[in-house]
Image 1 (tube, rainbow, N blue to C red):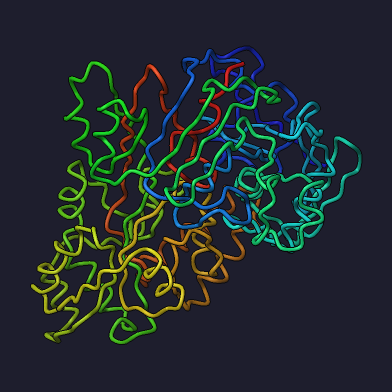
Image 2 (cartoon, rainbow, N blue to C red; image 1 turned 90 degrees about the horizontal axis):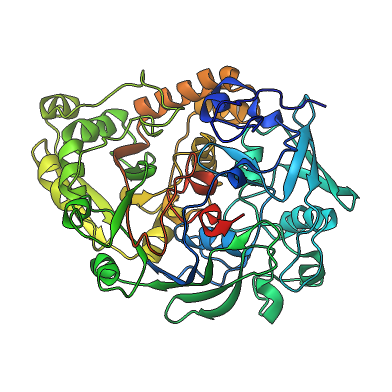
Length: 531
């Protein structure tokens, strides 16, 4: 068995604190790290959050019934809400992966077997103890009834070897296992779900029982509202907010509702909110890393988009910096043509670039005039900017506005030419590139990615099995080059989120690589716990 022996002990938070850093993620064999037996390092830092009776999050959509089998995949809000009700084997803080339900682990040298030690003292919300048997059951149950946000197909078997130890065997080595599965997939109680044959249809009152820091008190599906209460018996810290409320607010009112004192936290994609609140004595703005992507999904199976020169002409024709600055009202973060964001460690700076060059676009089109259709959100502003830019090079763009369910269906069916979509999930492990084009991505907003390229597929499959990041990087770099050359996706820009909040109630905190599998949200449960 191979154990983690790469430590960073100079983080200033206590001698001997073992820290998994972003630097180490790229320099060492991340997938086989193990034996994290010391106390969770985040507990050694002093919390800055106040103890409050009520914390109110103004959200943008209803996220479904908060169980792993019924939660909505239209955006990441549901998966993040689940993290307050359920726990995972690992978790992430501002520096990297940390132990959670698993206090330590060992991985075999071939990356096919992991043995996890499960914390002693964790309880389900109904008071029953959480054991290794629950962990083993969870993966066995997900094999028949998948978790809606992240697949577990790579898991071959899970077996409890004692009350506190579970062995998980994989079908193949998986570089993202500790982050994208252990840190995302909720552990569920055996005693509740074992007799349930259809968890999608199950409506028992115990379906929301987890082991997380909050319990579900009320779910109003009609209004997209959730009320959570602190789990006073939580095994890993005292919840700082006695009650959590999450409710839907229209985009145009999200900042105002915090200003009016009717919510404590909300978000905006508009950078001008920083100026609006610059002199506000009560409120602050938390700016995330640009881990959200705004992109054109291209269907290269439909003429004339089956010609790479047409796709490249579109990329040259669009002034993506102007589009980004106009829509976000902030500095442009023009998207990398290889999809991976420029500010993240897996970005390949050597990918081919497509600067704004309408003359080059016209050359590629050779004087041909084209008409293309674009599916977009009814409120998206980007199409209005794109239409004249494309018209200038001879491409007429017909914009079809459609709501999220309709867009998702059209993209899933491949019934489109171009689609404008914006979503998260591009800041964490780069295996998301494989999942997109293998049709394994759960996020509804990321559907529709199509690429028939044998070299890309082979590289994608191989990189997922390479445990050494240094050996893996050339493959991920080459995948980005292929995406940049073939352009099945044309990235317009990457977005930051601007979270308006009342520091007297809640202060957002950053998560390394984004919460869970690259979600740039601030409601990491670490920010809600005191030790």
